Length: 299
Image 1: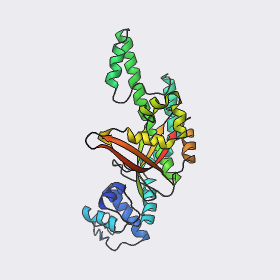
Image 2: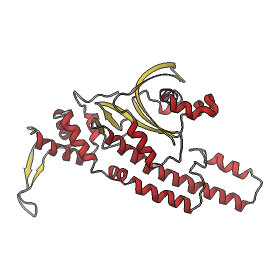
Image 3: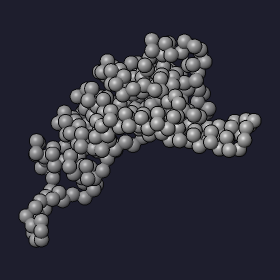
Image 4: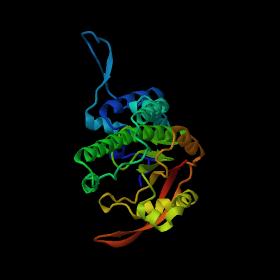
């Protein structure tokens, strides 16, 4: 867990702002509000841009100035403004119309229910199951083609929805500071604390097995348990006991309007406290406690 209200490290500065170009934009805007004495400028003496000033800092010194001049409240406002200028934010704002187009195309292609044709990473198993069917090679080819188209289109739909969700989360709370560069591990800082956003297609197969036909209602009634299962049954290769903002699909065909309604009702001020145990291959079973937000998407 990383905390940025009181101070900022070089690594966190790079995680939040992302690039040298954005760091310069950020510093120039901060300098307008709160002059930074360590900023060095040069004036162009000739050519088309004669008289214009530019920032004269080496990359290493640039990030040092970002760290040394960090002012959480003012910096948060500037970074939020820069985020609003990104393509990701613009895409999220236009998601409503983009989703209408994608859903109409899905229906025009007569692809049926909006559901995954096979699990991620299981294409080989899917093809083997198709090959074992008692039908012609042409029919088998058509099934694989349709499944590939459905998979690609659901991935595209989910990208649009996820941009929309991230935009809604960002706009939900003025105390949310987004990262301008999405390196693995941090997507948002909420009240100064780092949160990694994770999107899950379900509350895990183990959750469904335990609660059988009632799994969906149990998830809606108990988001804390959903989070516990997602932490407990994560893949060890990607294991993390970090604060997370979990977006969990209980229904794949949920509309943009319903997503908007659910996030509007979600409390993004006070996280849940999740206690879970994880059985490591080498270290054995260990217990963890983490803050976590849970957004359950369902019709």
